[in-house]
Image (cartoon, rainbow, N blue to C red):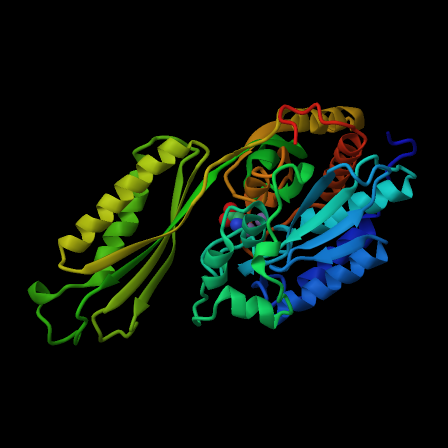
Length: 425
Ligand code: HGY
Ligand code: MN
Ligand code: MN
């Protein structure tokens, strides 16, 4: 176990978070860092430097996941892993994902400096493309690693310019076959992700640490609506087939379908509503909607999805608009492992830091790592619960607490021999 105190070098960590935020296609304080763009590739180089500086063995796989490994006293044992992502949606903040990657690095550096030697290897993973921005599906790196998405489907994913993931990853230097990415269940002993909450619960409760018991099940639909379009002045109202108005009905239908469940854990969002040709004097001809529905209860989420599909058919049919629905993803929820939750809780008690158990409505790479090994998450508060926007903020104190709790948890788990968790790898 840990003999001397684990000292977090907070200045170094905050400096690295600020440096990472500079690799962006948006003016500060916003961060835009889309997978495999020049900004993302520069951020990846920055990260590799930090991993090498820390004396870790670094490996990159065929989809661009990074693995920074601290060998254990018994190298043959499955590693205890931590990690997250560094890609960022347009006009995001600087803490989503990066706290888990650089905070994970800091936890490892602090443990090494304390003289602690892990029995099991400890591995820090930076996952490719946790955000769905470029290819419509999120968590590409962890889906590939866990086998949740097959290599052929992955390779063919296309971005808005029609470029495939395969083209783009090869351009970034990742040319090995995607088949080589997948790991088998048991490849890791455990995975614990440190992340900002991206919601208001911890801050409102005045508690610095969240221990995540369950992660919501996300589902994504893309809806295409098409009509003849036409001149805004010359087509009489009764002769129109306006896909934008169908889209508006659908957007309100999403809200109604969710509210009908009456549960705070059920959420639905229309985050994309594109209109073509987008001219004031032209009746819309083509509309694209992207709908995100989540719930920690999969059956309830699927009931909402069925209602939304019905609303789409009705809203298109009543206006004589053609429509097509594409299911982008429909994932199950993830549940944390009891033994890992206990290890996090024991660390909080040892450090004397208040905590509360909670759910995550944001999804994370942890959802897919749960297919490989026992998982859990550690949350720290976000100011006013804001995230996915430039106002996203996590305080230095809370970041430091998150890193200390992660370090103590990793030390506990990496000191264990054959697993006594609720599920043996
Ligand atoms: O959308 C999410 O929950 C995550 O931030 N990608
Ligand atoms: Mn995010
Ligand atoms: Mn995230």
